Amino acid sequence: MSPTEDPAFADLALREELLRPLTALGYEEPTPIQREAVPPLLAGRDVLGVAATGTGKTAAYALPLLQVLAPLPERPGTPTALVLTPTRELAVQVSEAVYKYGRELGARVLPVYGGTPIGQQLRSLERGVDVVVATPGRALDLLGRGALSFEALRTVVLDEADEMLDMGFSEDIEELLSAAPEDRQTVLFSATMPSRTAALARRHLRDPVRVRIERPAVAAGQVPKVRQIAYLVPRAHKTTALGRVLDVEAPTAALVFCRTREQVDTVTESLNGRGYRAEALHGGMGQDQRERVLGRLRAGTADLLVATDVAARGLDVEHLSHVVNFDVPSAPESYVHRIGRVGRAGREGVAITLADSREHRMLKTIERVTGQRIAVEALPTVADLHARRLELTRAALRESLLTDELDRFRSVVESLGDEFDLVQIALAAVKLAHEATGGRDGEDVDIPAERPGPDRDAGRGTRSERGPRGERARPAGGDGSPTTRLFIGAGRSAGIRPQDLVGAIAGESSLTGRDVGGIEITERFSLVEVPADKAEEVIRGLRGATLRGRRPTVRRDRDGAGARGSD
Ligand code: AMP
Image 1 (cartoon, rainbow, N blue to C red):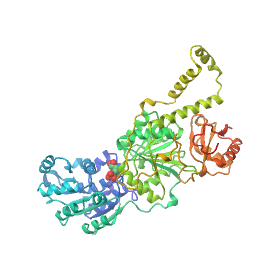
Image 2: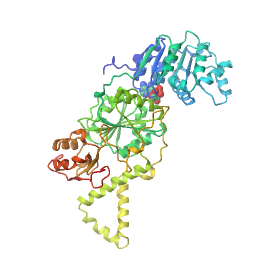
Image 3: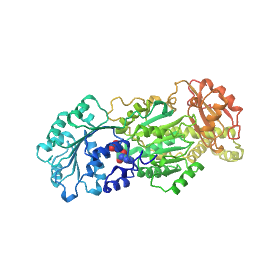
Image 4: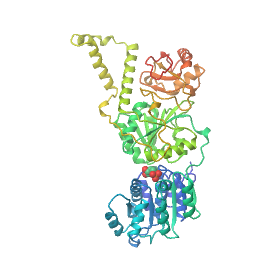
């Protein structure tokens, strides 16, 4: 994309003291809401924004507030900006963000909220503050006491206005706004725009510029057919959750998207610690470095790529089975762009999004804009993970029993047989095999459940969508009809990739790529889900086919997990 379509922060005419902290935070480019809201705000206009958490709305209004701060000695002691938020948590979060963006400017930022002793807040206000981030009740209280002055106030931001009205802050907000200077700038951000919120905006905003990320830019047909899942995960547990999800999904090749360079580095490190071969890719890397990383991915010496949107642009990786969003992307377009990386060549890909409760609303927006459902599922539990690992070990053992030449181990079993029961010997062998394939069960910790955010229609799609052993519901767009899992005796070591399997199935039967369900490729064999009523046809077809130069065994997977109603 050219720089005109896609402005960098530098093109937003922000001062150097604001640009440097953004780079340090690892932000590579403005989010859509920042691109749209920053210029009018810098020009002094009122702005009415429809944007949920996750869009980057905080920086969208905070950067312009900070841009106009006078040099420290010339600043009035009383605030030039007031940000109102519905909750104490958001007040703290916003003030931390404003503080970080305004670090080089020495911005004095103070969160004030109810439910805590007022004394400390009074003293801080007395010392001089530039930006106050407040819940409405406490702001009004401080105003009444004469501790908060609106004398120098230039900008008022109503953040999550719909929430504030829902929480009964309407009168407090009216009172605060009528006490604020007439010629102030007013900014209103809201995830939704019900009539009460719109009326509030009509009363208090002057000829506002309207910005929204919810442009219907995505025609339904353009959205790739990809199985889309989201897990609600507390922010602090996202890295652990990512490892868990990848362990359970066992992707052949995955691209993990992060918002910032810092996240890319942390996530890469943690995945490598978990035994993955993950590579980081971000905009701060030189061309050479980038080429080396991509080379490793293509050569198969790396199986996971962790990247920012900027770095992943123009990336030519074909064989991805999974895209994982470590955060909900900042706009539906970006989501669509990301998940378009899988589901190529007619084969179903998987897109997984980790969202915390506040990002939940953004998921809804994406669903609305794309017209596609994102199933919110319960994070696989430690027990699921262990069961899954055992299942893989069992399948590997079974395969070995069926195909390997095992006689040279006979003497080991026989000599131990004098001392131990055969089952016990087998148990010890299974334990060793399990541990050798990464069954580090002792290290797994439980991740607390995250409840959806304020959204009321949340929580649909639950555990009940998963079978008892973690098998999945049919892929998005599937019709819920029974599937059969087929065993194919060739896997990664034979160079088998998902597209080979789909290609062979589509070539040798009446099925199309879309009809093929979950695919799992292990070192030595592959499992493919097909519609139960077509299983025989596919088996017959594949038996005559060559896959990467071989004629592997093809049969129903007798294990049967995922083969409901077929065998
Ligand atoms: P918000 O919607 O304001 O709550 O922001 C959501 C998250 O996005 C926060 O963690 C921000 O630090 C992050 N963020 C905001 N702007 C950008 C950007 N331009 N690039 C990367 N991350 C961003």
